[in-house]
Length: 205
Ligand code: GAR
Image (cartoon, rainbow, N blue to C red; front, side, top):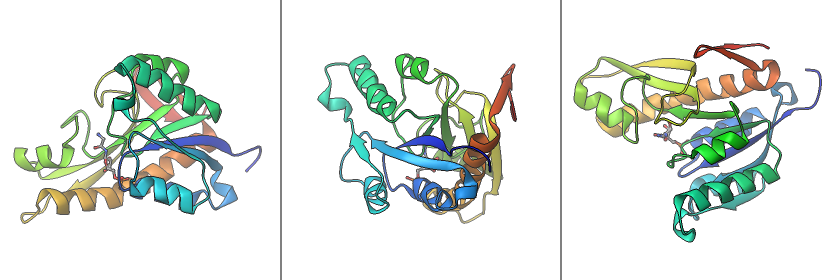
């Protein structure tokens, strides 16, 4: 790979298994990614501990510490910008970033959602898919826009729903496929860049 690795900031809210997959992939210089910081909206989560164990700087911006959602959004964007990222990855980040945040990193914020968009947006993708009775679901990596899980789709992966699935078993199986897809997608973005025309995303400039 030619050139410096892409600088990536990852935002998390929970267990951080997607983050861990990215940390592990980034150990290989050929992957083309350097995770320069990990941010969270809450303290004490395993995602932050994973970053600390890997020697990656962390920051925490709880919404409750700010007088408005806009102030939080600005402070979060300021913290992210400190690390001069080429790409921001929301990996299980359970808050919507606002328009102010997105303007700071145009077309450079990726999210991963545990459903096949445009089905089942929001916080409970696996539960909603299970309740609807679909036979396949999966995960979607997309470029974040101002909607809820509505941005241009970069990659999707399909997972069968089994007769005896509950939300946890389904989500865990989705996450196995999701981690693989996220690692592949972030690496390709870093090495090849992306082009978006009329919502259609392809790798390459
Ligand atoms: C992932 O499945 C991710 O898609 C989901 O949270 C999980 C985080 O797992 N995110 C959302 O539902 C966002 N709407 P992890 O903390 O183990 O990476």
